[in-house]
Image (cartoon, rainbow, N blue to C red):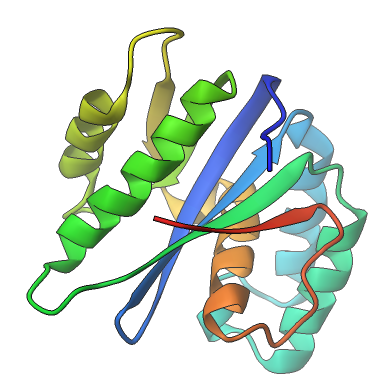
Length: 178
């Protein structure tokens, strides 16, 4: 499985199911139209954002129907079963490191992560530590409600964690174990 290099930006959000930590990664080269369509869908649901654990199943299906039509390059799920005694923040770091290593190896230069108060500073440390020379990897944290492309990553991660309740979009490339 190869990422699409070039001007794609990776959008990352997590989902936790029991002792499994899942991060969805969605690569998008042309974000403007996708953002508009996702905001319109959220508005039709009378919501400010599409957070999958808050949606009824029929709305999850409607969201995945829209996802299939969006100009997304690819998506992946990175997953790790948390060992007994490992803190969630440490599991997140292992999974995020795997994403950083893979993205950098394939030339993707930018990622956007959901801004989570207790993880934001640690994510920066993880990304700097995981980088392996070569091209720079730019990253930023953004609030989930402000970046609709994070909603795609949330949907992919949530659906994987739910043992997929819905068929993944055709642009989904699979799962990588961290």
